[in-house]
Image (cartoon, rainbow, N blue to C red; front, side, top):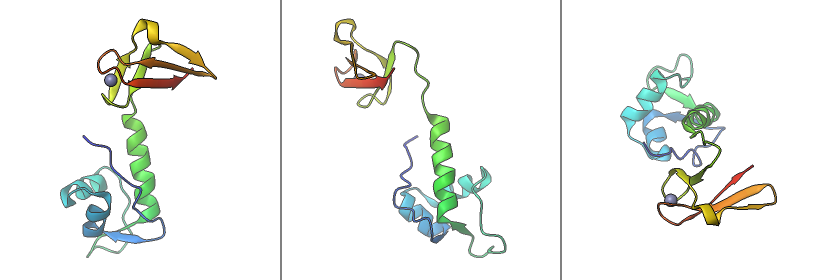
Length: 114
Ligand SMILES: [Zn+2]
């Protein structure tokens, strides 16, 4: 699953399913699934269903953090691979509270806080 882009959602605006699908760049079925998963809707607004922007943002943020990958001690999150990767042993450096290294798989630069 791709990361949902909640950047375009405006907190002070109410959204219909159609508008949310357009602005979050997902299809309408996905929006309906979000509601089933606990995305709050505006009470009384059954037709059309309305959702508040700030609640959508909040919902997506929580959804996102749940998906966050847990890294083991020696692992980095590689932005290129979009996965937890080990660094090549001789590339690991510690700098200003961060650890950097090169990805074993794609050679991309990776870093994490210590
Ligand atoms: Zn990589």
